[in-house]
Length: 324
Image (cartoon, rainbow, N blue to C red; front, side):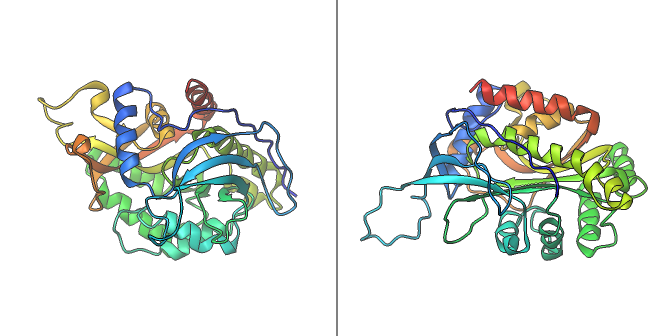
């Protein structure tokens, strides 16, 4: 049986995270405008509780469901419930919850999303889903995993993903690198899939990514066949994400410095900083924006990170959370 990582959290305020004060304030505005389950506050015990059904770490938090609670007007509900978050290995019964989280993973493209989710939930040794304890809906609040592009290259979902990325990339110098990564070098590339509800407690991020990269390392030793062990020997990670980008970011009279980009996910700013190369592209899917965000557009961001940078990434992520 694969080794299970120990996870630890520390109390901290649950605010949208980013390095710059400007981006942090804009992220707060953007996230408050669009979340369904908004985390108001959280309390985290330091102990880890074992579970026979999979990985588990219980975290107590207050979840605001007032924006989309489904409650009738005559029901008395203050919009806040107590929640215990738990970490689990993905499994087939998580299919629908994971699919909901990944609905816009490739913008509005019609592709084999079901096949993609089947791959994710069919790889229990590397990957984590976060749920709320005793949730009757068994909803998924986060999915993090890493998939070998070469191992699954013959699947329809991976062919669709490759087509999407190549069409989205308009930079000639980057296009050749991307083609190589999706082709001859695919066996060395891990597609890092990370999707979650906005304002999931940020204290979950360090143990979530610690667990992912621990599991990747352990899989290179613990998987039953040499082929499987080799499939987790990633030299690079490919990340597909979304940011808010100022509409005049590429113009001479546009904003400069930290006012150009607002990172929706805190870790993406670190990934971007450490990436070997990256490119952005316009998205057809746009969210409702507040007045403060009227000059920003939801934009796709693709990044490639050398695996040697992962320890630095984890260090920076821990520091970012510790500083909140």
